[in-house]
Image 1 (tube, rainbow, N blue to C red):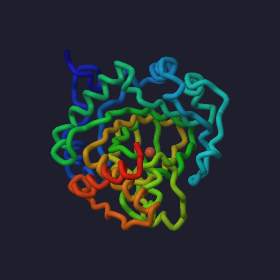
Image 2 (cartoon, protein in one colour):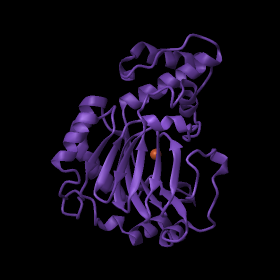
Image 3 (tube, rainbow, N blue to C red):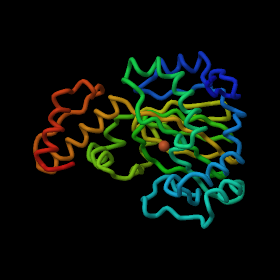
Image 4 (tube, rainbow, N blue to C red):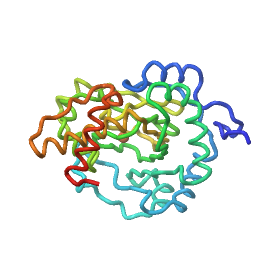
Length: 290
Ligand SMILES: [Fe+2]
């Protein structure tokens, strides 16, 4: 069987220039790259509204999109519509919706597999096998803002419809994300981050129009501003030995900090910190955490 490509013919989603950009930037830096997924039948609004009726409620999150850049998690307002209704009326309803884990739907799972297969030869030698492969669809009304936050996955965001600006910040900057915030995040804390206008100096605004994509490193803080049309973006994500090791070292530090024990430095190559990773497994058992 042919893989599902941009037009269901098996052609690559990422041209050679995109693969070069990934090769140069992955995994530590962000990069803008082209993609060829426009016009894919699984990415029309009708297809997405139909998908929303098949997904469980727990796989969807939607709310009013006219939000400030900095937002406390409990302050997010609801919009009063179903997910499919939100998609069908997205031009008018001032909302933001995410369809999560769409790879659980077989057609979208096959699409994700075929796209990630193009990247695996570049990614695997650097960060190990691509695991926990997930895909998300974001639809947002004109003017929507996704508040300042970070995500735990390696991510490529592909712009399908409309225009958005991904305002990206470097990963691993302790001014943007203090160590205690990382520790709380990896212990199940919310992804939203405290915003300070002084951070704008460190920001790289990456404008995405249909056919553009951006590679986003693990935990690179960002906030997103939608343009004056509806925006549809597909996010393809994976995790790695590196992202898992980094998370474990922050979890270890959370346990150590709570007991006022010395912390472990988290390097740019956490997967090589074998002693500290073993220390996490031992400490977790010692303190009785699952
Ligand atoms: Fe994000």
